[in-house]
Length: 120
Image (cartoon, rainbow, N blue to C red; front, side, top):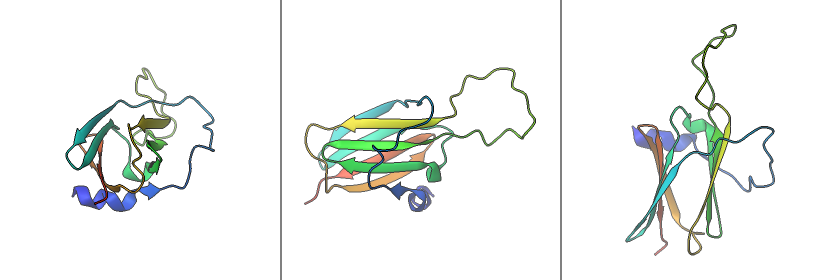
């Protein structure tokens, strides 16, 4: 099932020129170095796969998108709001260039998991 999410991702040319109109939500991320590259986990609970864009430039991995509230109907008044529903952006710098890596990614239990494998 995780592989079916891959078709929803878009690889973008350069999102850095686009400036958000409101405050950004900054999701938490973990980065692991492996024998053949890197594994990145980003906490994106409630984010749809089609609302995520991934880009690699030099030694930076850019992940941008938007978490939308899809569960409440129009005309509903809120009583308490603690979850951020807005655009998010995550920039992760690596110690060396990651251009040319192969990317594999999936959603698993609210986490975006990105595998960056070094070119052989």
